[in-house]
Length: 161
Ligand SMILES: [Cu+2]
Image (cartoon, rainbow, N blue to C red; front, top):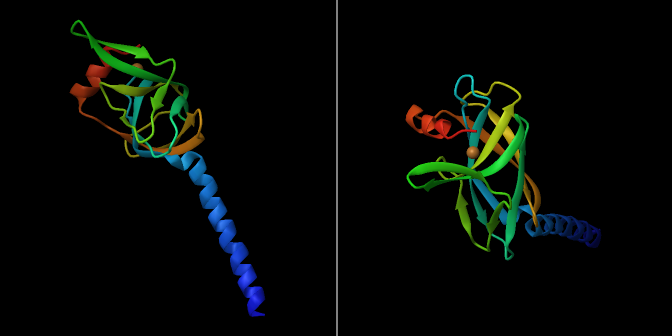
């Protein structure tokens, strides 16, 4: 009887261990924090999404795509200053993260652009954003809608598409 219980425990423990181990081999190598979406300005059918990514894995990985339930098109963009003018361009090859590399997506820097919003989104709401990594695969993360100061949002809006 004790042997039997021991065997059951062993099987249970190995299932838990392998599930944990399995997830560590995949998406949990990527730590995503503070994902948020800027509440769109009235009448604007696009907005930005931001997050912090830390590659905890031993391999270089790449964020190659993003999708959300709130917009039909999501693109990875970068803003940079060229001759005193803020320019926005699409990062066609995504964001590469070496082992232990951290990348902060933020207003005025690298961001995710959401186009063709399919619903009205308001500050305080939460949605799901799906990140696609070349190695780690798909990772769903919660994103919170936040309002930011109008000067900042206008800054991004002026250089909108
Ligand atoms: Cu953009």
